[in-house]
Image 1 (cartoon, rainbow, N blue to C red):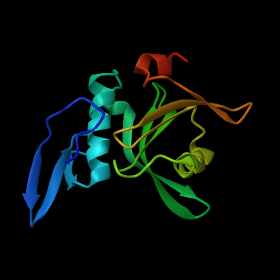
Image 2 (image 1 turned 30 degrees about the vertical axis):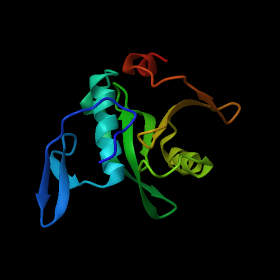
Image 3 (image 1 turned 180 degrees about the horizontal axis):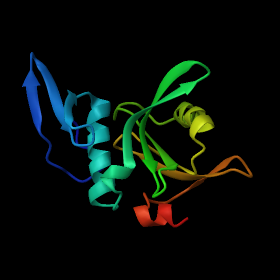
Image 4 (image 1 turned 90 degrees about the horizontal axis):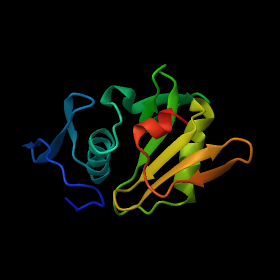
Length: 152
């Protein structure tokens, strides 16, 4: 798989019926190793190990119902009171992050009403705070540590 703009981590990978699978520690099972999943696994490990995000506060593939349609956030971060505070969206490394990606997260946010977004394709990472008053994004220069998100 492609080298990402993230630290290198070791993963449990196996081949089953000509298909590569990677063990997802959050979901406690093997999942298909797609390019987007490669990004998700690296980024979640980065958040937990380098940025202090508690694994128990991260929900993977959180399902939402929007206008009768089922959607899935790639990951949602919750606070100490189980209130969602961040939507995390992943793309494959070859998928450029565009306005459409931010629009996708904004649609999810119409249901969750979080303050923060992270969007990454493993090469580029964007973290922002949603300014509810101006409906604009305030970008961080780097991914903040967990305590900075919680003590906002």
